[in-house]
Length: 467
Image 1 (cartoon, rainbow, N blue to C red):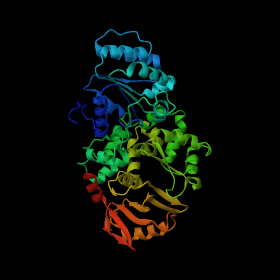
Image 2 (image 1 turned 120 degrees about the horizontal axis):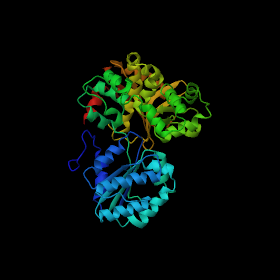
Image 3 (image 1 turned 90 degrees about the vertical axis):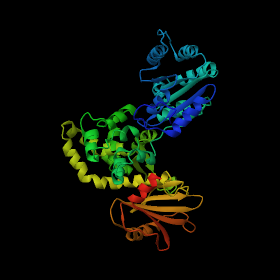
Image 4 (image 1 turned 30 degrees about the vertical axis):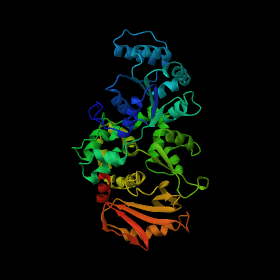
């Protein structure tokens, strides 16, 4: 967007910027709430939006309301070329600001507002009074942003919050879509891009550190495994910012990176299985973990739940970095890199499923079918990589993923069709189709036993992402 003075190397978010621009151009007071998991790029988005406009961008810390008011007042005084006033609370601060801006359009962005709420739960009530008594008649644009999703939802967005009904808009900032990540890496060989995505994920704080002039193993060595590297302690920092008892969560996430079943997770993490739900609930709330049930089975009938780490980079960190941190501290990173190289293709083969699932979820393929559920399916010893359902049309798509060359599609189909017989979902009326994803095929097929088959190789996926 040319009308924004962007910072260098900012990966633009067009939808979010358009939303901010439209709100900014509206007359009168605007109150926006932005939230999303850590490292997703909220701060970069908001600072880039504010940079060419009359604004104050303030990053709150955990030291409480009074200390943050001191810092915010100092920032404001510097902005207006003023002597620092003695302001005791946010009400006095906004009175000062309204007086200084003289009803001109002005942005106040308070980032990590969830830190303030955590220390002072009454702050939401204070802001309610400030909005009702001061800001409603002003020309200010107030943006409150936070990384604690549960805190922002409960403290600012929920019907029980004193601020409910006062916001003029809200936006949850999500990780980048796979197509957007591909645009950034489009000059790179596509197979290499798949590998990069499976390691460095769709979180800008992770994939933007990748050096495109070096291969993936040099990037892993220099950006992740080397002591002092930008992502070396990322998993540790992320958990310590978010959670109490981080050591227990470290062990749980390490276990999830290896096994998805709760019993095995509890065993590997040395946690009582009865206590596991309280930990997974917190990991779900900060969107580090996802909970998966077979999509054709009602929740009350599900005996087995699987847990997966949502973010590819965090999964990689807990799989290879955290278990070997002592060796890495000793400078034995070449050893760990060799371990990664020896297991690399097998590791990518497991993440390839998630890569292709994203392509389906984001409607890069099957764009005209509204799948309501897309998930792994299992029953005892039977497992299907992905089943996608459309409840209204009774369409069901069965998918298998093979990170291999020259895949025999007919052999895959024979096995897959046998497994579908155990899937109980609209058995007499469903419309079945099948998809196989692979590096390449011996021969692509479009039909097998009167069933519609889609064969997607890496060249197909690359073309779809380019469109």
